[in-house]
Length: 61
Length: 299
Image 1 (cartoon, rainbow over the protein chains, first blue to last red):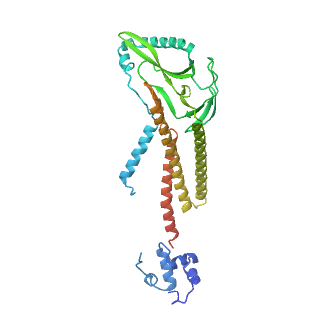
Image 2 (image 1 turned 45 degrees about the vertical axis):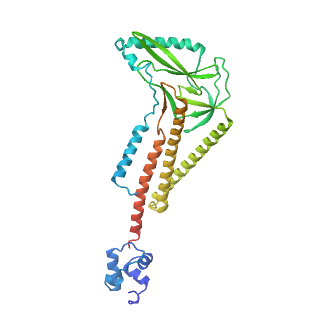
Image 3 (image 1 turned 60 degrees about the vertical axis):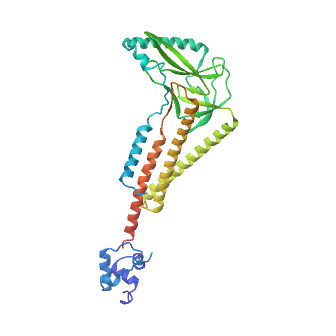
């Protein structure tokens, strides 16, 4: 979505109001949970739906 | 192991049993029908007069016996060191009855004591030396019809006993045992001091970490776990060691009518309770650490 919107991580961080490190945690999938207000802010900044940035994958263990 | 309600209940029962019996003394009783409540109850109606008769008889006997015996009420002077487990001492008391001062070294059994088997009538236990030998003397009440008599039963023992300190000293004659006890005693002191030092150090480190809001971290949780383990090992080891000494002493040095006492967990149960508290805090901190990690990774 970032590439589609031609937006850098720094710009997204400024718009959403979360730190770069937290954004990095979200991007790499290390986050345990996402607050609804964070999700709402990201969707608002990227002008998209939650489904556009969330994906479900079955991990082979 | 899955911890459910039954396991917790069993643990609570064990803790309560330790607390209840931990303060009691373990007696090694022997049946002795020749004196005691059965004989005394025959003359029960006489009440206090019997008691005073017994006391006068006892005093008379005492004064006669004291002439020839070297009674030892307390160890006036001994040098050496002993800890909660054992130690070596030299007796420096010079006999006032012309007995030679021995140059033996004695093993101190600091947690074991003696007690005369308590029954109705006189309960008196004394220790004396005569011609270099040690004797324990206890009173015996005999009733024949309406006649009361009091006598002493003397038993030769191979240790020294002080009724004042309720302390037993076992003579060590072989150099091997002297060296072994000395090394073991100092090793125990070193291990205990080392363990206490690190437990205290870890305790203060955790306190400082909590004051700096870094309490719920892996290293602090591990420190609490280590503290719980060290305290449990110290408490259990000390108790088991003393119980083994008690059992060995009971097997080899039992005397009819004299109870060998040992206070279970006298100081050690405190360590075990501290350990349980540390484990409780460790469990709480571990849960809190997981919650904090989840909180930190919630964006």
